[in-house]
Image (cartoon, rainbow, N blue to C red):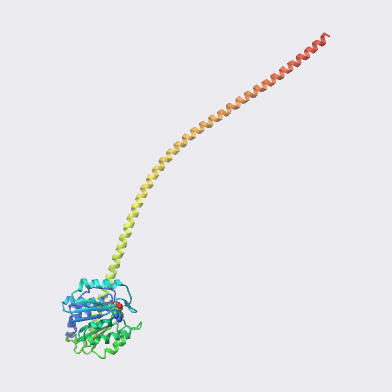
Length: 351
Ligand SMILES: C[S@@+](CC[C@H](N)C(=O)[O-])C[C@H]1O[C@@H](n2cnc3c(N)ncnc32)[C@H](O)[C@@H]1O
């Protein structure tokens, strides 16, 4: 391993990104840190900021090295067919983060790339990152429109040089450009192409653009590939941590609900006990009342039966008296008839 290889990596290559957001660019952040440190750009421009993963990596490197770099992030912040269309919150969050962390040297320009062109004089941009719409025509326009703005030591980065789907055409442009300018390419993270488009290759980057030899390529690509996947893992880790804290939050809510339910159950049990007590008392009162009613009713029925019995005896006595009277009447009638017969017999005897 020659000394250029190891000296190309620095402390900054291993720095942790302060801002991590879902992005296809995450694995290139260690190279962004290294590149800014080596190039020390006066003016840095990014075409296509979206949520800011690449742009804020450049800003972090500028701030930590305290360079006099001025950074411009240009985007319509509306999205496109490849990145997807998104809402206003994306711009608001990026704007807020920029204001809080990099307000002193970083400016966000919300416009089309072409509309922003006249704001930049020719020959002033040291580092240009092109990561807009990825169709061949768009990325070619972006490159050739902005090429005159590049300084003598100008470096252009092209993202997605290894994507061959959804009409991505950066790889076609890259095939053409890498033969025209000193070039280096990373295969990982959808591919990142690095071009020295100025008349002078910055000497700090000479090693990168020097004649490709296998061991250099293996060393650089392996080193930045591993550092990049470490950043990707940090992001995945952050996502898992966020997921865990969301889960913890929902477990907390569930626990509150459970303890509320337990309180309610305890209250319900107390209420049930109270109702059972009331029920028992009522039952006792009812059975007392029942016994009393049964006694009273029995007495009433007994009295009633008695009175029925009394009445029937009286009726019989009355009937017997009537019978007696009938018999008496019959006897009287018979007596009278007998007397009459006796009188007639007497009369006959007298005769
Ligand atoms: C792939 S994203 C950028 C990703 C970003 N560099 C990162 O690190 O995640 C592409 C962005 O370019 C923007 N864009 C595409 N074409 C544009 C144009 N012509 N003018 C302005 N913005 C454009 C889109 O709005 C989108 O936010």
